[in-house]
Image (cartoon, rainbow, N blue to C red; front, side, top):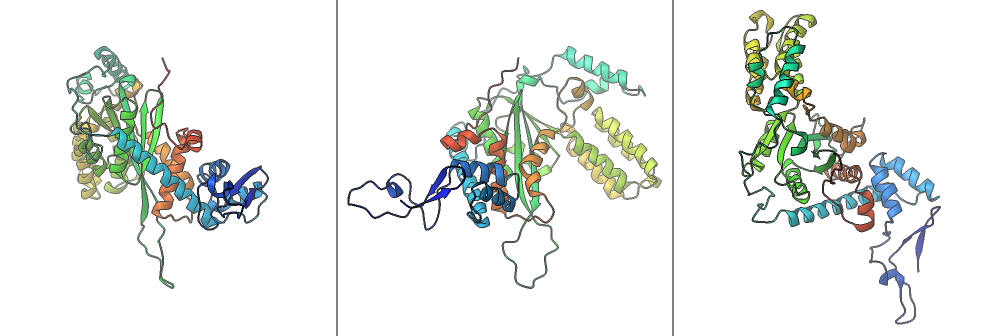
Length: 420
């Protein structure tokens, strides 16, 4: 039987060529292994682990090939295009498996064809909230640290965003990450386009107590469908949901539209991006020295840290005309605060209670799953190539690699936390 030795590691990659032999004899080339085309080789677990999941997702394709061929003592054994095609093929298999798993979990009449829940939860249930005495104590601690003593406890208590208990909600952070998009083809002699086109990937980080799971998809609706399926697989489809986003309007609208029938969801505006808006006001909208701008930025940050949106807007309105350079920027900041008013909690109280105030977990997943590998100087990516690497990196990040290589399936559920 023809074969190609996976040199140096004692593994074999068998070709699909038929071997002539006596009639009726067992032929391992076609009877034991599935048929392949041309010179295609069977991909062993060793190759898939070291070449695809632990190679391409960390190193460039060229460096991965150098390591593979050097380990196998087989210079030129695998070529660049073969490796990239294998990565896309493996990622396609993962995506199809997740789609089938989601279709099994999101069946009617509880879900529609897009995975949106069709059942409704009791909106009056408040078992997930912090006890009032704990919130009052946190408010007292915040006021004791406020040196200016210009904030009343009634103002902090009036913030409409409730404080949840850790174990009672499922936290979901969602963000889009884009990498430089590579043109499929370019006409000879044509100048490069100045437009910055990107290949986008939507990343979701789902967390419940001490357990977490990372999901990637090509669009927001696709990742929301996977989130819904993951919650169903983990028996969390009736859990209270707390979303963290950067304030992107289309993302926020998609989340509330997806879970509008189910209810019992809340959304928090990420504190880092809220600070970024304050800095944007200072750098673009105001005039004066850096020190003068910093005074306004710090005061605005202080008011928003305590969730005092009305006072923050009033402070912007009270800015003297001589301090404003671009009134349109000031109006944009005010509109941003008005649109996200219901999603701005008292971050100070949440911090005292040990609750999350930002979408840092998904930002970290963006770095690990996408940016670390794909956002380097001179890199350009096709949509399929970018999604393939992010999919493979997510499987490895979730600790599903061994299960996928051996059984060809993913657990696709949040593991049960053993934390007390």
